Length: 442
Image (tube, rainbow, N blue to C red; front, side, top):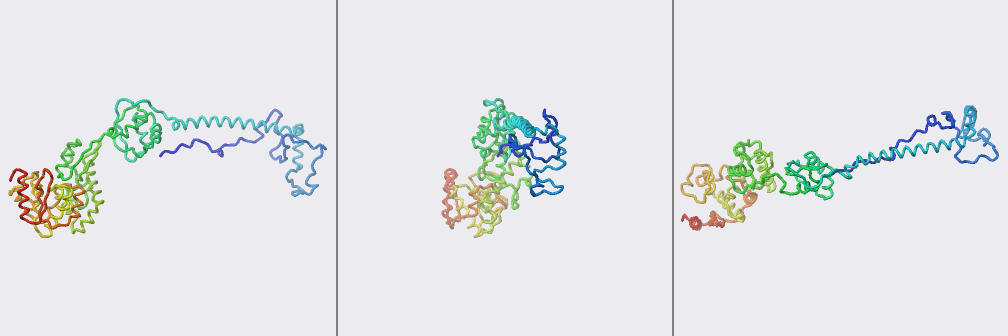
């Protein structure tokens, strides 16, 4: 995640030293040539002409570039001759003086390069030191400090948070140990309880330990009513119940077909961190419902069953509230659909209990006559909405009922979750008697 810094200069960026002889006068005196002096210099150490003869000039040889007023490469014109005469003794030592100047320049260039490289080396070390050998504490640290790791934080960002909180000595020390152990992808957002003055390795160990997270885990079981969910969250998460009950439903992201929270607070385990509000918690539950709904194609499959999405959730809530084992869910779903198709009242006990806001395994004749649109003994068809918060298996069963002609089901042994199904009323009566016997009411 973090690239190494660019601490090395490119050789092409080295600025060359000046070759202006006017600023390089040596002990021999002033510069030996004028700025326009184009005459070539003798190579250092070159032997003089043994005969002392000059090379023929271009005018004599007819070399290219010769002619009146023209000076070709290697030629000496009238202006240059005058400049040479003015130079005096300096011109006599022509082959030697340039060699000294070249040696002097080379020495200055070498010295300059050494100084530059030393300076660059010191600066480079200063720049690279935090990366090559970052500051780090020793030991496990002391005291206590809570830090928050934001979602999507890189190792560098986490290291900066830890360094600012005094947990580690430097962000780079944390980045280094994280990269060495290749655990960057295991770092999770959240609040962590750490210590100040920790070695980067020890801080990383705590960030990877689940026990270091400052979080409350709240498990919401399947089949709870919304009132029960809110009471459970308030108790386990330490949030005020009144705040949960008073949440504006428009703020939690309910699907467009939902008429309230009932049925849409998805059963699961939630991690509630410091600072989370009632809206945050309920929004997380609704979001989890939406995820499950997308995964099973709730809206699409409900349409195939000629149901609205809300009706599908309502069926699932009754399946969930009636209990039994997972294998019973598709069968309970089939009983509901068979009764709907025949226009028979559903006669679901859990709807009567929901209408009275109570829990019981015992249903009396009086219960079946309660005045409520949720009383499926008195009203045909589905109740107005969900009566509980169903889990994924109940939702799937609502959309995929088993094949069968059952018209009744009775959980004859609630303690062992035994449910029996039948399409004969005589068997249904017998199953009810079995239930009453197991409940001690028969």
